[in-house]
Image 1 (cartoon, helix red, strand yellow):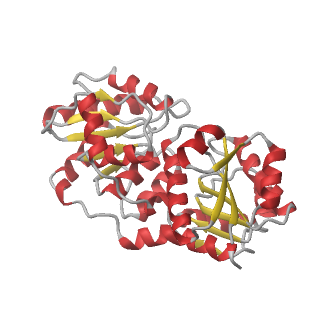
Image 2 (cartoon, rainbow, N blue to C red):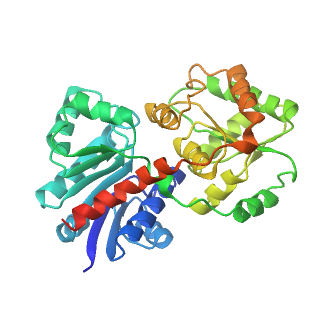
Length: 360
């Protein structure tokens, strides 16, 4: 018997991390429960439908969302950091409204591998308690999210720590990344250091630090710095502003890529320096050493999960600290351990729980 799932998340916004999350969720859900009809709420429903092979409806089309939920056997909210009000105060209430709609229509609700918080302010905390306590199951991707749920007084549903859905995705073949490198004239036979950056609020000092560290990487390690935009075109603008400050040559990949292409590109790199969370996760999936710079607690939480620490945050990171972190990993870059099976299994467990809810 076909089961129906509605997925609510930050999809259709040209963010590589979120698109990879959706791809990984669909891959594992369809492995666990093959007879599924999945509808994704998206900012670009036509693109989401074409790219992922699912039904999709606009995030603004509330009547269509309500109808889909009325027919659904499960509402999945996630993955990602949907329930927080640091990057956006309004988005928290939007995702809570979708949960409320599911509850009103008596659709089972699962929070799927979410990164919870930070939640700031009494009103936001009240609505989190009111609505999230009525979910049927909550999985979170890190210990910090567990702590945030406890702080908010969200204790009624079963809650389990799993892992980011992308950690369950299959590693990609390296051929696609090699072809893209060739088109951009990335020198063959030289090591490559990937750099994934974003603009964040009014922080600018990190760009000078990144530029100076990239110059040293090019000069002292004889490696080619390659900027990888995870959200297009915003991240390309951030990369350009850093490359302009550099004295050595850097290469900017200036196109949109599929999840498989992103994974393949990262797999062809010798090391990844990243502000973007999912650039770090891609590196983990592809067995590439990484250096993380934090702009949000979710970055530090992920790094802690895999036994790493950030090299600093955007306000404090220095060129010296960045280069030293890279140099420390450089000698052992060929022996980087692959993603642990335990983390992969934890990521797959999200889909196992969703399947249980579907067939309860």
